[in-house]
Length: 205
Length: 218
Image (tube, chains in turn orange, green):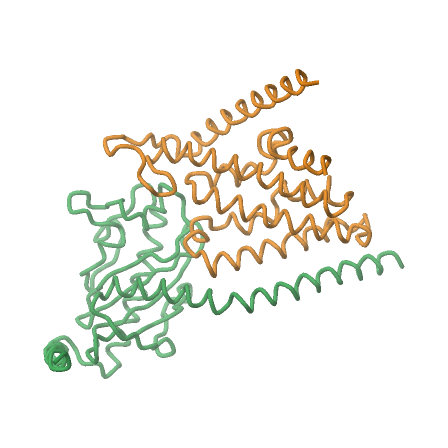
């Protein structure tokens, strides 16, 4: 159990897919101009990651290693399409604002990377914890970046006005360059957090 | 050789499994997605024709004269029993791919309104066509699709002449104008060939219907 908790924790800070492994960045920067997109994308991504890891871990002995890539893609694509359809049916506004980035989850490096590096070699239970940890790690970064950019760049959070009316939004943060700047700040924040956690772990030991 | 067949078979099994599960999800979500599209379309129709109550499907009898512009839907809009005009949901290519517009034409051959339903052009440039805070005429707060309201189908519909372009987005402006023009012309043609009564008689009809409405209210 302790081991599973450790796997889960890896994805959130130590091996955060966005801030440490630095994979799957383009969609992360593109959708983070408002918080509801960040939440939606994070959840969609976690869902696809979870089910792809479960399935691939279950069938890991049946998947021949020389044909694993196409099989991974088929499984990931099937779950992504399901998410896309469900979103279109029940959350049309969210689906509209995220547009092409939902179908593009298929080629998101985080999923391919975790499936290849983790799920194809591990049992189902660790794979579930890995996907949840990685999904949460992805989601918190998206929400964090989106909140930062939306508050400063538009004066709102998830569409609700939080800054006083007199606040003149800094458009820079909504535009791509602002996304890169905030993303850089989050990387340094994560490194700082990681060092702090390592130090406190050392002190305890 | 034997190995290739085996790998192919395994791959096929996975593909079949994935397809089967997708088919299930698709059939469950399909009616819901169609219902959502219908809600969005009705909402836009209500914006173009605020008095519209009944939307009769006339898709089969309205044809596009421009082979690159496809009409997905065409409707005869009526308030109670009085025809108000024709609305066409038309799509064609724009800078960033498919663009879908809803074009409403009144019985007097003027444009009732234009709504952008789907547009994937560059954010901050072409996408301003669907931005309700972007005005081509700043003083009067007229948006790009908004400027078409009230134009007659006999007008030129030429960007930079009688249509104001979106700054730095000539392609978007031209492609959207082309879709609007084509839809408006086809709508007018349909009205020409149909038995729908024109402006003056429709006005009488409107009065009649308001009378019946009030008596119905009692």
